[in-house]
Length: 248
Image (cartoon, rainbow, N blue to C red; front, side):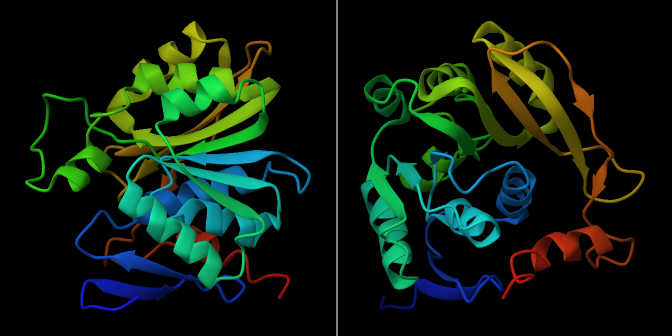
């Protein structure tokens, strides 16, 4: 990777690094939290797919935590998918993490009942709301230009095996909408955790686990606070960022 717009970041996990295009959408704390949330329930033998993978950050972090070697990462933007593929090759993981450039909806129709586990950090903002970026690719990463929440949940149902799991991060104010969409598409919300910027502030994100074709039983997990009052990460966030090095 050459040029000023590319940046190499150390993931502090099993020596993995990731190239990012700083002119495009770069990953944030939400991706790290989702990877950690999902990894606790991903087995090495699971068939796993990361949807809306971007530069491949979640797939890389899940690999670092689980060493699953049966992974797929799906991204609709050709340039971003190329970067994700490069990141897998750069880390010597292209044998284990297959990057596919595809629309999630069409990919789901072609891969019915194939996966045990899905992770997805989707576009958060419905079309027609919020302030779109002047750059089309960045706007598509943030807004539901190619994939609405309803379409995403329906695609997850098609992709998952019976009793398969989906793990997602989303904006807190869309929690009710997400739970309702899951219920319409035979995915039962099993656990949910709200994320708070600081103590005393409203939640801005949530993590949710859903299971296809299973009984109703939703566990509301303890809140996750990201920052202390002084702006430093809380101890739990530091612990989450440190996971993946435990078995080196």
